[in-house]
Amino acid sequence: MFKELGQFASLMKQAQGMQGKIAESKERIANLKCEGDAGGGMVSVTMGGSMRVLACKIDPTLFQSGDKEMLEDLIVAATNQAMEKLMELQAQEMSSITGGLNLPGLNDALSGFGFGK
Image (cartoon, rainbow, N blue to C red):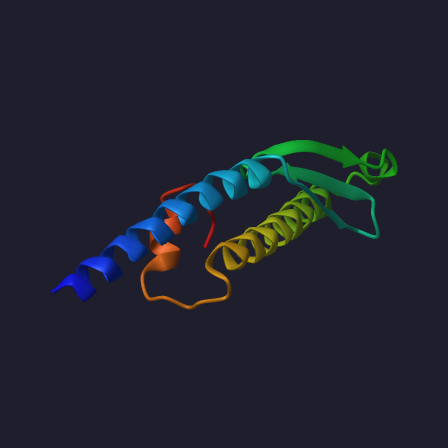
């Protein structure tokens, strides 16, 4: 019985330590910036850690072409690339919290703290 209590106390201590790591990681993620580009750099999108688009830059020559659909496609591609990079960094950050452990349900629990997939 005392062994189980000791194990429980140890588990609670580890959980408190992980909670602190989660808070630190959440702050690091909030400060991240990732850039995606498309069309050979003619369109670039910068996305912040909160999954918000911070900036979108479009080469002026794209407006001259008059190809609205191509421009829309390039913006979507650049935004998706920035988002994928950000999600990859978030996954790396989550892995650093868990020490690479793959615990069932942990990713769902961490997503409640503002982490991505």
